[in-house]
Amino acid sequence: MTQARTAVVARKTRETDIQLSVTLDGDGESEIVTGVGFFDHMLTHIARHGLLHLTVQAEGDLHIDDHHTVEDIGIALGTALREASGDKKGIVRYGHAVVPMDEALVTCALDWSGRGLLVSDFAFPSDKIGTFDTELVAEFFRAVAANAGLTLHFEQRRGSNSHHIAEAAFKAFGRALDAAKRHDARVQGIPSTKGSL
Image (cartoon, rainbow, N blue to C red; front, side, top):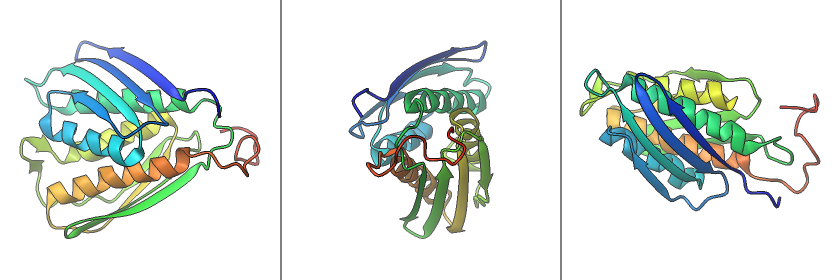
């Protein structure tokens, strides 16, 4: 692997204006400003545990709610991950992680298959974490999965605190993504019998 796996995505609509960059072989550092404090906190976990370098600058119609901003950042991040991964030659492809966060325990398993799909059973005990709608956790990951081409599964094994459940999910995703994006010297070409992902 000699070419940097990086991508820059700009997404501007009537609802949001997003500038995002990602480096797959990063150092876990991030610069994130979305206007949604809790979401910034969660995105830093993806970068740190996924060993990405991630920058996000976003402006959105937060006077309405956080939905458009969170979903559109998911679209931008998924697009950047897909572009940065290139042809996926030599990658592991699959990744999984089980992450405890106090009483919460969340599993993330993913396949960088080219087929975007989210399966999740999140059961948040509250509708909000501060001012953040907990239903946006699934909305974000659905957008990432669809645009990155990830088959993405989450299983919430336990948890009674919404913040802990969400944080475990974001950390688990970062760790599963890190496992899947790694290169394996034993893998020749595309890790698929079809010859493409």
